[in-house]
Length: 310
Image 1 (cartoon, rainbow, N blue to C red):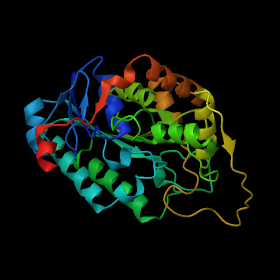
Image 2: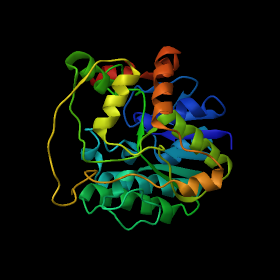
Image 3: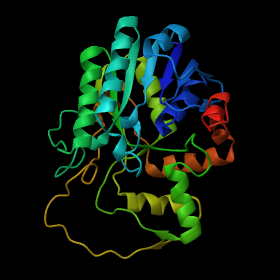
Image 4: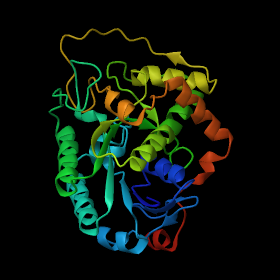
């Protein structure tokens, strides 16, 4: 496969998948919001239907980065997990099936909760929240309508295409830099992975034509509190931790409130690939700030369409 369509480049996952795949393949992009442009990619008209978009770019594979592709640790993610997301996933899956195009859906680790750590693909420790049920319903629509689809559950972080201070990582760094306080959840846990590391694994999975559900995550399990501390350390920012004393009498409930860490044995076996350490991902994240990579994620631009809206 050489022609890809990345849907949802307003997400961290979508923007970084597009930038990474564009280094090796012909990539078109689509966003639900006007103005997102990734270097070396062809941005398509947001008013076109999925079928029209597939016909226009002649894609061989769709990398679908809907709302479920957003990290559940991002504060803005939870409100986007709804029935509309399920309908959108169904529309893209049907369009791919009718056009004979392969589909890869980037999904979320937040369908899970405790009490166990490191959930495998068949884990029954699923979260009962409305948002988690919506993600599972979206996955089911993709698999039912596009049986050879690949569904990747993950929790990814990285630079955003939404401007210099609009992304989650960017806002964390700004908060530490200006306030020095690290105030993040220390209860919930996951296995986050850098978006470009995820992109390389997805690219390998596409080459091998993997299908079904796979978990892709970092090699380390940690909380948002620990993540923020290590992020600050990597960027050499001084920080002060807020002292918290708490004891749990029962397992946390709610969307992404509990244990969402992923067991990645299946993808490691099928691709003969190791999952990266968080230290490696954070090191690459800083290098991307310094080597010009972030400029490839150009973010929103003032176009004729959004000028009219203004």
